[in-house]
Image 1 (cartoon, helix red, strand yellow):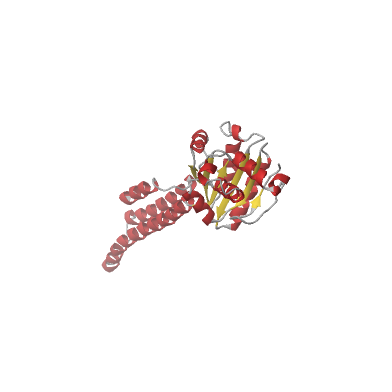
Image 2: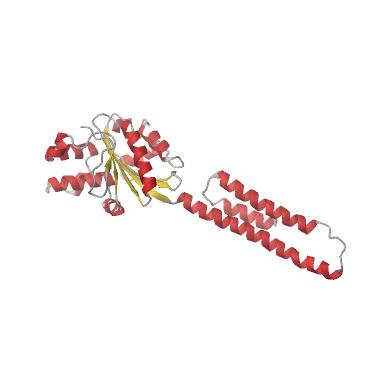
Length: 271
């Protein structure tokens, strides 16, 4: 059993799950192993020879049962580790830095990827993984590194892509709350996977990509490459000049929605 326990603990070193999950699983395995060892070392009661032979055959079986229990726990924890590390929702944040966060089914940020050089600088300054989404977003937007991008003339766009409608709605609500506390303008959108993939192929954040498409529709002379070099503020200003609706103010206030173009619009967009 010592060799089995060693192998189990070594396997756990590579599993990414909360420490309390590992501890409970290892405790259970240890208890099963201890019971098996107690059976092996307990003095056998006097009994006829045939019963001793039967008990002797039971010891390997008990070892096998203990080993099977350990394997089952490992399988469950392994699946839990996969579920913990696997994003179920992707959140794009575009200002001038563009980053994308991967949030797992438990609402924890498990991935943080920079989509441009400013995004790399931002993520080098602020560690977001391992935190709840709301905590991570607040930490990011209140950080010194983010401060230059949260001025009154800035524009923050958050894009949420998920197959889990309940989680997506919760993340949009948390995003709206965070945006409402910032001095700059901003909006939060539900975006489908196709739009996210297209933005990735273009090497752009989802918010920047959607704004680029909007500007290119208004001014066909503008190229995607040109849009990639513009900040969200610059893109929105050019869209406002060319679009009567944008110039008049568009959607304003928290909780506003506008569907189309890959998803709904939420959040603060006062101009």
